[in-house]
Structure formats: structure tokens, C-alpha cells
Image: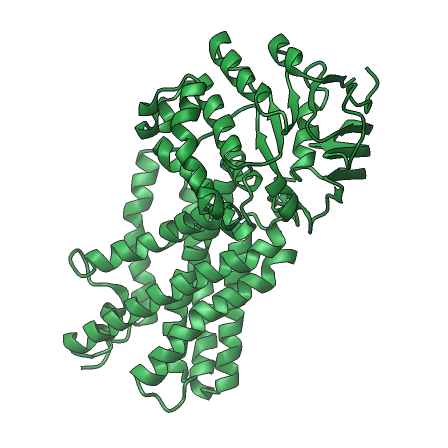
Length: 264
Length: 221
């Protein structure tokens, strides 16, 4: 049983379901109707663009094109993280790119290679969706981890400086903050893993089942993607923080406020 | 008193413990100190006096490398303070800031924490001195099992000074060390500081009792 296609006219009609949320917003005067409509239009256009692009990518299934798409995705995520964490892009683009690339590539290649035994490690059918899922979670984890790390040091600056004054080297002084940042970044995935399947079918499972696979195959994919996501987020968060340190602390070990937007 | 003149009997016999030469310091965009110079010889007790906001605390922060001077030089025991040397120089000084933040958790964990750092690990046995120091500083031994949030301002200040003493540094920097203490606790702290003649102390204070302890008072204006 393969996936059922959705007709364009049918999909267009399905937009009418938005009447419910829009009506609620109008009735209760929730002032986000404009934002909602813009978001719906953006979603449609962005997904259309991605759909057409992926159609081409899947048709060619050229490894270098697929790698290029991954690089584009990582680069967009890179700048999103810098923006989300108020980091000045100039200093952090490269270290964040490296952290994201490592956090995405390692679980992705192990997923497509040793797990699925695909002869072509850059097979678009697997690399694009799986890479995208891992990367999306890495982006979220990085923003939580990096923001948590630097915000905590700034908020408890007196304690941090006191630690330096007691003779701590930088790696010793940042250790508790690193620990807390990693905890904050990884907890959401831990919580998801602990409750997965109890409330609703997760995305990977849903997609695999809709694609015609049986539920047992679907859960194997789901387990594998959760492991890939968790591993990827752990790798990317620790690397992102460690690799941004050089650009965000002065040689004296104090936080360099010039590295951050709106703090210098 | 002219800045930089050593106290009688403590004229320069050896390398100054602290030497500040013509530093200009900015803090949050404002010029706080301009062409400031002073020195403190080994074993001297010097107190910086001056009106609030004039940059006294910034001088101590400068010595710890928390604020880099725009111009001028700072030397600790003859060694110039640079981004490379600061990591070693901090191990020669103990710093007690004006507002002490002990964070959260148990006091015992807080007092033990610095000995987890590589540079202090060999001094871990100094924690055995805690009961005597608590006694001298009029602190109850039960405090060690308390949450740090339960300590009064004066208790926190005394704990910060005890923590600095346990590190066994020859140079002690104190920013308003008795500001939150009652006169009994303040006297206990000052009596202790008098009992360590070999230590070099650079303090900031408006407390007359602290000024009386000093070999020399430097008016920062």
C-alpha cells in the first residue's frame, strides 16, 4: 500500500480548515491574525520552493548536489543559531558550522551506512530527510545550550570572576556552566525519548507508515532516528560551546562583551 | 600621604609586591583612573581611601585582570601582568570583593570548591584549619552544613575572607572587608589580619578600624 497523493485542488480546499483558528482569533480579538496569515503564506511558498528543489535533487540524486544541499541547510542553521543567541556572526560562523556539521554528519552517515546499508552514503532519499531531522534538532539544542551557557555566566558574573580569582583556569571556571548548558540542551530530547509513542505517533513513524511500511519497520526507524538525534545534539552542543569559547572570552578569562550583540 | 611612599621601616628593600605605574583605566566606557601609580611592598598593609565611585574597586579589579588598563603597567612580585602571566599571578593573590556572592548550595561545598582546581589541590589540607578560623571569626561551626542563602551579609563576608586565607596567598586584596559586619566581628577579622605580618594587604575601606590597621593610607583622588 503506497502513499496516497493529495490533489492540488483538494489541498487548496483544505486551507479552509484555518477558518477555525482565524475565527477564534477574531472572536477573542487575539492580535496575531496578520502574523498568522503571513506565516501561512511563507510556509506555503517555502515548502513549494523546497518541494521543487528536492524534486530536482531526487531526480539527479547526485552525491555532490546532495552534499551541497546539506551544506546550505547547515549554513542556514548556523546563522539562525548566531542570531538566536545574539552572537556576532563574524566571530562564530565557522566554529558553529563545524559543530553543526559534526553533530549532523556523524549520526547521519552511521544511519545511512552501517544501519541501512545504503551503497550510496549520499542517497538523497535518505540523506535529505534524515539529515534535516537531525539538523533541526541540533539547531534547537545549540540555541538552548549556547544561550544557557553565556546567559548563566553573565548573570552570575561575580561568582565566575571569584572562581578565576581563586586560581581556576578557564576550563575549570566554565565547567559548571558547561554542565548546566548541556543538561538544558539535552533534557528536551531525553524527555521526548521517555514519553515517545504514549501520546501521539512521532513524525518519523508517521512518515514511514504513510509511505506504506508496516508498523514494526516504522518503529525501528523511529528508534534509530531518536538515537541519531540524541547523539547528534550531544555532539553539537558540546562542540559548539567549546569552539565558541576562544572567540567569546578575553585572554584574561573574562567574558568578551564585544562578541555579543547588544551587550558591548 | 604621597602616593607610592612606603611606610617608615618598610622602605623598598626588595621587589614590590604590587607595583602600578601610570595606569589609565576605563570601566563601562568611562575613564575611571588616569595616570595612577602606587606600590605596595612585601608585608605592607595599605588601605585605599577616597570618595565612592572614584575607582578604588576598579584598581583591585585591574590587579586581578578583570579590567585591563588602557595604558601603564602592573607588576605583581616583579612580574608584569599580561594575558599570559595573569593565570600565574592570580595564584599569588587572594581577592575578596565588596559584594560577596556565594551562589547556592551548602556552605561546606562552597568552601571546598576552590581546592578542586589543580593549582589549589595541594593545599586541600588547609581545610583542617576551618574550626580554628571559625572560632577566631566568631562563626558557628554549624554554619558549614547550612545553605549559603541562610547566611547573613556579615557571615558571608567572613566566609569569603576565610576562603581567601585558606588559599595561602601572600598578597590579599580586600574590598570593604568589614562593611557588612558588626563591630565585634569586624574586630575579630582585623585582629586576625594583624596576626599575619608577612602577608601583603591592599584594602579598600572607609572603616576607621581598618584605617587604623594600615601601615599607610593612600588617598585616591
